[in-house]
Amino acid sequence: MENAAARFSNQSLDHHWMPFTANRQFKEQPRILVRAEGIHFWNTSGEKLLDGISGMYTTPAGHGRVEIREAVNKQMAELDYAPPFQFGSPGSFRLAAELANLTPPGLNRIFFTGSGSEAVDSALKVAIQYHRARGEGQRQRLIGREKGYHGVGFGGWSVGGMVKNRQMFGTGLPGVAHMRHTQIPENRFQMGQGEHGAELADDLQRFVDLHGADTIAAVIVEPIAGSVGILVPPKGYLERLRAICDRHGILLIFDEVICGFGRTGEAFAAQSFGVAPDIMTMAKAITNGTMPMAGIAVREDICQSILDTGAPDAIEFFHGYTWSAHPVACAAALATLQIYRDDDLFARGRTLAPYFLEQIAAFRDLPMVTDTRGYGLLGAIDLAPSGAAGARGFDVLKRCFAKGLVGRVAGDTIVFAPPFICERGDIDQMMGILRGVLTSL
Ligand code: PLP
Image (cartoon, rainbow, N blue to C red; front, side, top):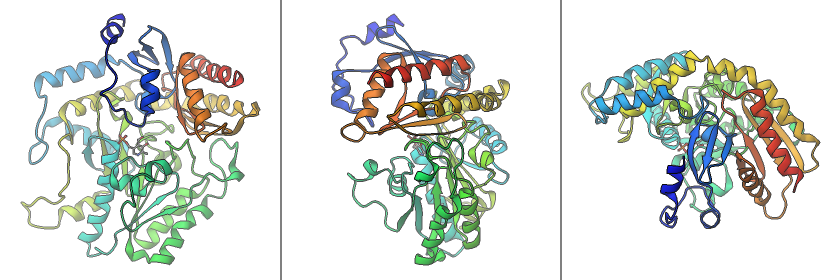
């Protein structure tokens, strides 16, 4: 640890333009993490910090898992890279088969990408090509939702609905419409699913009525909107979306980049909420955060419709990435899935969830707290803004860091997504740090 910190001292910070970061503030007051193990990070001063957000929703099994490291080392020695276009390597086929066992029935064709953003853009492109393959090429509209986050590719931010991620970058894809978000006052302080889901989902029907179903390719939602600050779908919401999609031949895409791999207590939120999409994205926890990797699971017949177009020896889907199905990432993912099975980690998360959610809900006693929400091991606490929007949230983030907690904020919302390996005492410690910070403001 000292070595990593010592190696870092005197390093200029100027050249790295950091993502989604207040660069000027950061370089004045850096928050550098040099080591991680289990549910802790260490900073350059050698101080130990709790990981309240599982890396960035990436690391539910805890940091430094030897099984993953060994699998990665072995793969690096054996086959460090293989071209993914017109060639293959064994790991991706094994991994795809394993993933197909975790996804809802029928979503058994897996396409790999390097990031969640790429997974989203891939899903949107599959939807559009699928309709074209069936002679419905006019179905090109994409429906997203306010407050949604689907990454930063042009497709993803166009269907996304987080204002700051959109406003600097122009008009985005044409033919995109957004349903209302689901954060309604009636559901404040509701842990789990609130009410009025079906009414909100009927927005999709309104777009059908306005534009014609035969112009709409797909609707994409996060089952639980994560990045905006954990919006749990109200009761009946996902079911109604499914019903409208079925009635009108629209594909339903679930963006499970945050929800996937046990975060909601089941492998995917689709299973937790009992609603299966036609396409789902996955990323983050697929390698326990160790290697960049993501992908989409696609209904078999959708994939088949695309494969059946064109000559038998022609490329069917003109899409893919240099890092698609990277052999080392596949090895990391296979070792990760093995850990999830061996340690029964999804069940462990499920068992911890009620206690965690109670602790989140307990923040309602603080006057500055305007909402608490959560589901599974995802929880959020809204703070009344103080000054500019997001200023108080950022202040809390920095103070928590100084007190030994790596957290995450979305504007003035504090978000928790603890590792599944946490004990109740670890949750208490995280909440204790936040409470201490909030009461000191
Ligand atoms: N979709 C969702 C729901 C996400 O939460 C994220 C990232 O947080 C993305 C897509 C984008 O993933 P990435 O940052 O890997 O591109």
